[in-house]
Image (cartoon, rainbow, N blue to C red; front, side, top):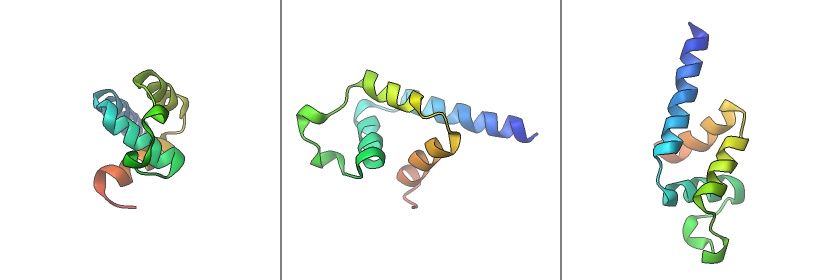
Length: 77
């Protein structure tokens, strides 16, 4: 049913985030929040794992998480 399908997609996104390395988490954060490439971020501004996980968890809307994930992973805007 539709609820199950959406729930599976949500779980996949959560698993994706848990399995993503720190560098890629930083890339997702910088691209979405600051519209900049990771290489343009000064070292002292880089977020740690805990901060990035807190940021991800604070995004409650599945559609927003999907909008963060999909373009960067697939190369489509």
